[in-house]
Image 1 (cartoon, rainbow, N blue to C red):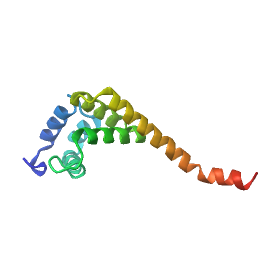
Image 2 (tube, rainbow, N blue to C red):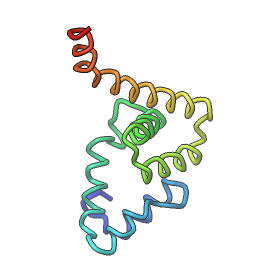
Image 3 (cartoon, rainbow, N blue to C red):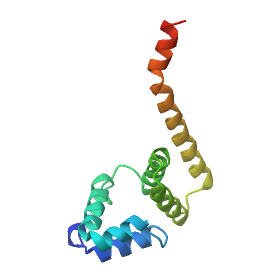
Image 4 (spheres, rainbow, N blue to C red):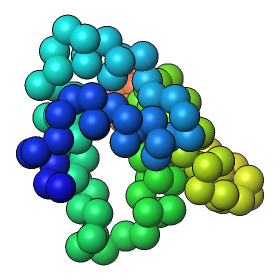
Length: 125
């Protein structure tokens, strides 16, 4: 069954199975007030992470998704990817390393944002 043929209810059921029994509240609400968005989100997921033809493993994709969610502060995605990671049996060491990478990326962003500050200090001793 292609993604375009799925109903919002089918999408939410599949998500619930894949996510370890829970889906983000946002998706539940979207299913009630904007069902087409649920299907669209699933189509976008298939575009970003093609189920059969992707270059990355599902574990790698999940860890990347978790890292981005951590770095951007997306609580629903952090919860979803944490549950999915547990369901997939991803080792805690891999999850903690993912956290460390996300933390480092975020601290690197802050460091990179300080360019003007450092220049102003350097130019005004």
